Length: 559
Image (tube, rainbow, N blue to C red):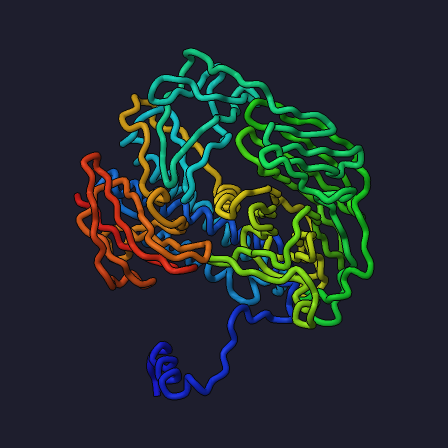
């Protein structure tokens, strides 16, 4: 008989639940591990599309709240999400399709991202008319952040906050600058651009051919281009074991017994090569906000360029990478040995994390020689850890104290040219005291703050914060999605608890509310929530969260 899937499972549980075996935890598939990496450009397009759509939904929701005349672009955003979902189909996103599929897929991504970027910018233009100013700065994440963000400025111009104080800046050329900006979660700030008082310039970050040092972390580089030391000033800890090298590129012969694009086998490490010594090392950026050392090297037949960067406010070490991949049947990893002792590693998954052993005690542990993660993996002791972040990679392995990220493959079937040519990606290493720092920095790496010119008028609203977790009075949680409700009744906030904790959570909202509901993923109301409206025009609400719970809220603005 026909019926709903949920009804089938409820009936199955009622009739046979106690008799059925259950599996607690991850059900690891001991095959097709290469699909985490094959066709890297396609996987990058997927990640960038997800982030761009997230930003467009946030700013479009903000525009609808600030200007009632603005029409939220439901239809266009839904079509864009359908394109993303179509390209997440098996065998597209696994990387196991023929060459023509990826030509068509990339064309679809390009068209969709161009449309969504236009929708985002149109919404920001609406916001600009409500806030004024010459420049908008946007934080589209759930975490407050002070960072160096790029901006295009007229020659000789500076940026001023609401108190007419110039923002610290780093001019890279006549029109390109980095600005020192602090923004609350899910917020937009308006600034004046002019030619008044110049900012007071801080001392530049210490950058040389042999090291980068921002007073928070020190990175030492030898003449080969290898990182031989990473020192954490804050906790006074060495990150690397004695004599070990970080960011060690490792190429392996990759000839699986079956399914070329799908698999790589446990014996892949039998034959390996390292990178050649650096062809050149140069300091290409040395300012008060960011410093960068550029290293040019080769691995086998493939030239690559890495820009290793530190900003003044962060311990995150970024490895911005360009490579012309000219290999066939070669797998590429970057290895980071760290001075951490732990039997398990943590991996980000969708709306949470999972722990996996770092040893190979059993046959099941041996089989997990490659595992997937979203934006980060982490090794930690009781009060300290080191995390490896990425902006578009999914394959990883952690054994004992060595974390590795899989960067590229080069199978020959069913696409004989799979992954050949140019690739761009960024990964990062960072020490941390608590895992919340890792989660926040992974979001900032993937969805960084950005600027956009405004309408060149007086600032009428210096900053608008739509949403922020009230962590002073409750649990940490991540606001993953902000969008207008499909039925037009208010806006939807989807959040989750990332740390396996339970308790009361509180959310601050930038507009007054006349109602709020907990609802399901289909945006059907299930339970009303009480709302505390404040005199300053905002609101606050609290709710209970369980470990790793995904919660969807409908918030109905007062106007």
